[in-house]
Amino acid sequence: MENCKQIFLHGLESSSLGYKGKYFSQKFKEMMVPDFTGSLAKRMRKLENLAENVKDLVLVGSSFGGLMATQYTQANPLKVRKLILLAPALNFAEFSPPVTKLKVPAKLIIGSQDSVTPPKVVIPLAQSTFENIEIFICEDDHSLRKTFDSLDWQELLK
Image (cartoon, rainbow, N blue to C red; front, side):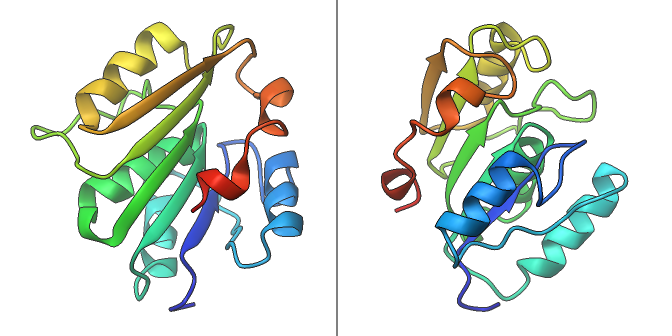
């Protein structure tokens, strides 16, 4: 596990067997694609354990997984190299941006028709959280089904 640098964090009601989890398991064999269940605190404990001896992390977080990736980075900024946030649930009641913006580079990909993590709510939260953030708004909904396969994952994960 120490050499693992990429972890995919699925959404609240998804798993490693969801579309994105299967995609990463098949196309990026080196990526960890664990399952998370339970409360945010329980999920965060599992992520902390998985990443305990890992540095230079690239975290890909989808929806609730995006919230997890962001919170992990707030707690461990020196361990994370980059975040890729897919419709991140930064609008979750327990989340608030840090006092000082995180320097870790982040890419946020969100659908213009996302009603679960509305761009007009999530984007300002992301901009308040990250100093170095690229935002991509696509013609899609929360699942990003139209967009996900067309993303250049080789480039994004570098």
